[in-house]
Image 1 (cartoon, rainbow, N blue to C red):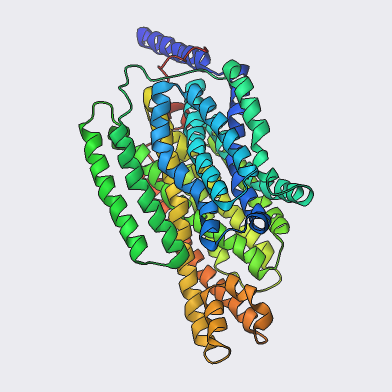
Image 2: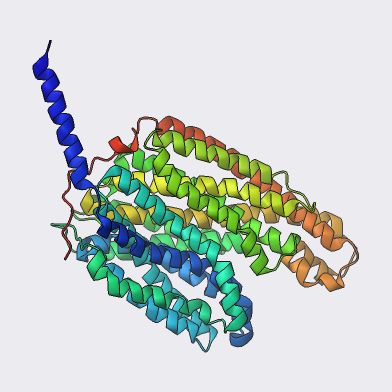
Amino acid sequence: MNTSGDSTLKTETFQAHGQAAENRASNREWLGLALLSLPTMLLGLDMTLLHLALPALAVDLRPTSAQTLWIVDAYGFMIAGFLITMGTLGDRIGRRKLLMIGATAFGVASVMAAYSTSASMLIAARAVLGVAGATLMPSTLALISNMFLHPHQRALAIGIWATMFALGMAVGPVLGGGLLEHYGWGAAFLVALPVVGLLLVAAPYLLPEYSAPQQGRLDLPSVALSLLALLPIIYGIKQIAKDGIGASAALGIAVGLIFMFVFIRRQRLLASPLVDLSLFSNKATSVALLVLLVGLIGVGGTMLLVTQYLQLVAGLSPLVAGLWMGPPALAMLAAGITAPLLARRIRPGHVIAGALGLSAVGYLMLAQLDNSPHGVTLVTASFSLVYLGLGTIAALGTDLVVGAAPAEKAGSASAMSETVQELGLAVGIAALGSLTTAVYRNSMTDQLSGLMAQDIQHVVSDSLAGAQSVSQQLPAGVLEQAQAAFVMGFNVAAVTSGISIAVLAGLAAINLRHIGLSADTSSQESNDRPPFS
């Protein structure tokens, strides 16, 4: 018998268990996670609160239609454009320091937004909120990678972190409805102040400081190139969502792609690049980013269509529609927490593929939607399956991206993950929104010929929202036809999403099959925990 070999194996196993025990987080880290979850939930709140506040602030500030769009879009433009820069900046100057600076700026901008006296002032405040918001997501996620070195705990922590965004979206309509009912629209922005205050007070005690050793100075030309690449692309995508494919949208995307090429060339030549392209050489990272991108494309467009269906077809108020969106958000919350636990016993690639398969079923259920009284129930059940997949990929996909990165690149990897998700949401709204609109316009143009005045016909054939705005001037049955045309477009978009997500599930199952159980996936556990300072 080979007793020496058995003894060596037992010794190695004992050492491995000892190393795992040393890497386990203490109560301090879990309290830190609770603190880091607050900014994430705040960003989810911000999405839903603004949409509820728009009608009230429009009465006070009287924005033009273009200004209204910028009030909504300025935040998204800035947060998507600055994510990469802020993720790398945190690696260099310190992630806790950047988080506290960004939180302070977010609080100041929130006050500025709440007490805006003009649409231009509110747009400027929303832009500052976007830049500040770009510091929060990558900083919090990178700090989690520093605090939770044990793979089981890190996966669970990222799952909890990811689902706080969904919780914010779920709470937003209820909280926003109550605030708007008793206070002015500015209260929607002041919600951020208690969160910012608590974060600034507790962060020095609960969060570690970490900055990457031996990193060069931030390359400002790369920062400029990243903005010149991302902002025109995002602008073009949003223009397609609003007005369809046009010259300005095509020009914006073309300009962005040119600068993207120049940006990538520059990163290859720098010793300390803004984005380390070697991160993409890891297959798990590349596939996880693809899963996040395509998954968020489906969710982004479908979320827009679901909210429109609930209000414009089912006739629900924003508050009631928000309440019906609660179960899907809770499904995402449950998936984000349970997916990392399942990944301890089932390979993460299989968990992701299975969740995406359930999402595909949800999309195909939405394809069966009609104008029946049971439509709201079907939408809620179907979208809950969609969000179940979203919670899973947000937790496990993000963990694969961040976990595969070296400790000194965690901020940059976190920023890439967030940027991909922002782009996915924007592309989804543009692509699926445009597809639904095309089906709607084609159907209504054929049905309305000669039934009403040309100007009214143009409004009705443009969108269902337009038809609702002139509903009092429409012949009997036309509004119902418009609703049916919208549902038809929704069906087409849902089928398209369902097929795409089913294909993505197959790709994930094949390309992530080599990733072991979560206890074996981390190659970073030899990094020492950074000291609290």
